[in-house]
Structure formats: structure tokens, C-alpha cells
Amino acid sequence: MLAEKELLLDEIKSKIDPKLGFIVMKYQNLTANAMSDFRRDMLICGGDIFIFKKRIFLKVAKDLNLKYNSKELDGHLAFLYTKKSFVEVIKALYKFKKENIDTVEVIGGYFEDNKCTSNEVEEISTLPTQDEMRAQLLGLFVSPISGVLGLFNSILTGVIYCLDNKQKD
Image (cartoon, rainbow, N blue to C red; front, side, top):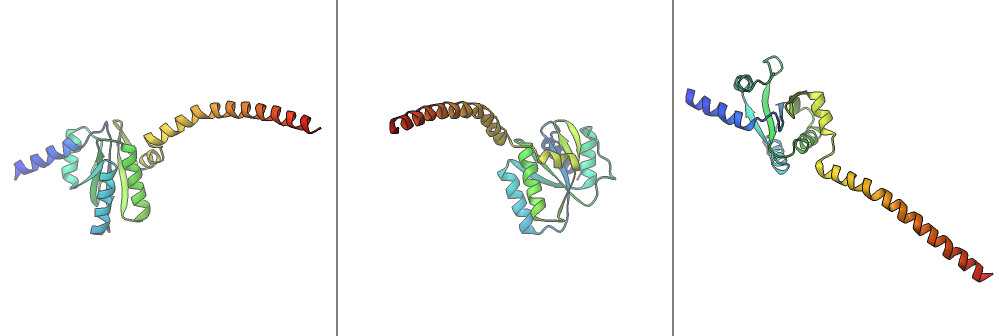
């Protein structure tokens, strides 16, 4: 039995990476279909969910020097982790949380090697994704060019309009 627990601890340690980020959450009243949908949404955005017992997570947290205590962890616990985009996983979590009220509660997490409270995790969920930031940056580059093009267009249109009016007179 002890060897099985060690394998479980090693598996959890391999999935937790404070640099990439993870979220500790509490869940309740989740149907099997809702949990299946939640897992599918997590897999689509590059994340996964792992359900654990509190005492096992506390052992892992102690081994990895994560700052968690037993008072802040109660109820049915799970953590979300990703090897890709942490922000996309959080966005999917809060979308699911909005659709399934009173089923999921974020306790906290780690993002870029810093511990986050549930409020900070919620603020991170409002950040734009990498694709959205690229689109915003592209919009910043295109905006001045569009303005200059509009200026030249209005100058040319004005000259043509004046010549057209002169010809009619």
C-alpha cells in the first residue's frame, strides 16, 4: 500500500508545475454529465483536471514547498493544470462556473511561480489570450496606416470634386 501512495504522490508531483500554473478548486453537486463536459472543455483548451484527497495534496504541497494549509482546503478537491496556456484554462473554468452556478469554487492557485488567491485567479481570467493580444497589436499597427490612407483618399476625392464642379460651371 505504501508503494502505491508513493506512485500517486509522484504522479501528482509530475503534474504540478508552479511556473506553468495550476488551480486548486472545490466542487460539489456536479452531475456525471457536467463533469464529463468540464473535462472535455479542459482537454480542448490544453488543460486537465485531477481529483485528489486533501491529505495527499498537503503532502505534495509540503514536498514542493507550496504554501497551503489544511484550513483553506475543505470539501471535494481537484486541481486544474496545463502544459500550454494557463489563461485559456482559467477562461474555460470561469465559463463553466458561470454556466453551472454553485458547483465549482476556486480556492486559489499558482501562476508564474506565485501563489494566487481566488480573486487574483479571477482577475487573470479577464486577461486576453495570446491570439487576442496578437489581434490587438496588429490593430495598433494598422490604425495609423488606415488614417494616412483615409487622408490621401480625402485629398484626392476633394481635388476630383473641385474639378468636377468647375467643369459643370
